[in-house]
Image (cartoon, rainbow, N blue to C red):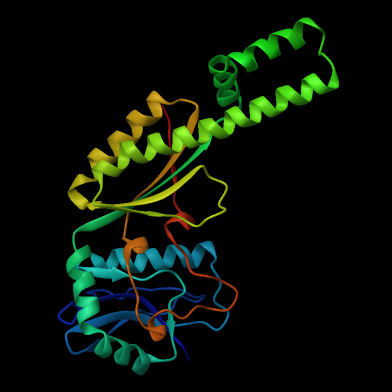
Length: 267
């Protein structure tokens, strides 16, 4: 049976005081396996593992529970090994890499920020901010709708204005939040959001980051901001061995852009 890997810790990481249950139906008991200076938080992996909400939440729950006793380097959802021996082999072979990652990410958390336009609000902005769009809109209204070529022209101008606004807003979001973080990483491409970014920051800075996101939402009410965090820093972990980064059939592993909990930040 394959071994499911939740995360990596130092070898002296304590075993959970109470049994922690992980993925699967029924949930598989979590255990810690050790090799040299490192340990891995693992469980048996069900044969039919898929990125269902229940298992995404279970993955995060295990990292939260085991991380409360010390630093755990989180692996993305769906990280598999052939068996426990393969996990131990990967830990032994890449000890220095994972020790460095633990040192780098200890005390750090991830915030994922997505943004989209509120359609009616951004269209009003485009009309107000673009003189040619405003002029043509008013002319067509006065003419009872105008000709087909005029309507096509207006549609093109509006689309161009929205795209320009997307670029400006993406820049504003990144320039506002990036200085509050140590690092940032893009989410999956083609997600449909004008921004999908993850930010790495010290845990103690979580409140100030969240407050900055709220202020941004208040200043830009045409934006819908979804802020998810604090999370384990999934997007900033670098695995180096296939035995620690296999994937269950039919899924590609969860990332910050695919979290089960997201909160809309309202202005």
